[in-house]
Amino acid sequence: MTRLVLITGCSGGGKSTLLEALAERGHRVVEEPGRRIVAEELAGSGNALPWVDLAAFARRALAMARDDLDAAQAGPGTVFFDRGLIDAAVALRHVDGTPLHVSLGASSPYEKDVFLAPPWPEIYTGDAERKHDFAAAEAEFHRLRDALDELGHTVHPLPKTSVAERVRFILETATMR
Image 1 (cartoon, rainbow, N blue to C red):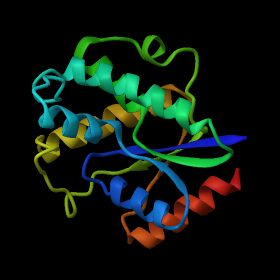
Image 2 (image 1 turned 180 degrees about the horizontal axis):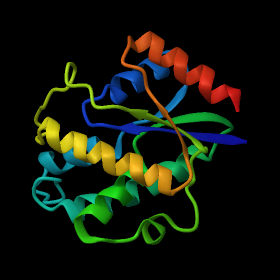
Image 3 (image 1 turned 135 degrees about the horizontal axis):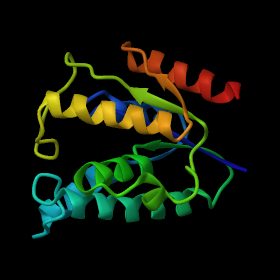
């Protein structure tokens, strides 16, 4: 049986660093679709960038997240996702009003327990792939939190602590169920 655990939340909240630490400890992880899309689009002449065409970006992220889910089902065990299908569906709803049930289908593919990185201004940084400011990241966080509640997930806010402590928190919480 495969368990699909979603780690989502505020941009710049330490999710990617956390997934790297989980991978270093031998856990299966899936990198954030958005960062992969931005890297591909910047390497080419694509327009599916969140600051150019957010709807195209979200649709591409939905497709990539579905592919990621299919690939993750190939083996047993727990797979940790750095963002995923819900994030893309929330972005699409934000930009064009597409209902979550249209983007996601009948139910969320992830475990009921979801980990949510809160806004953390002390570690937030922009870069070539993250051009929005902290206020936009906070707004995104609130949209995600509301959607997770709407979808019936149990949300576990990640503590603002060391990466090692966050890993411990996730592994203890994810194996309790």
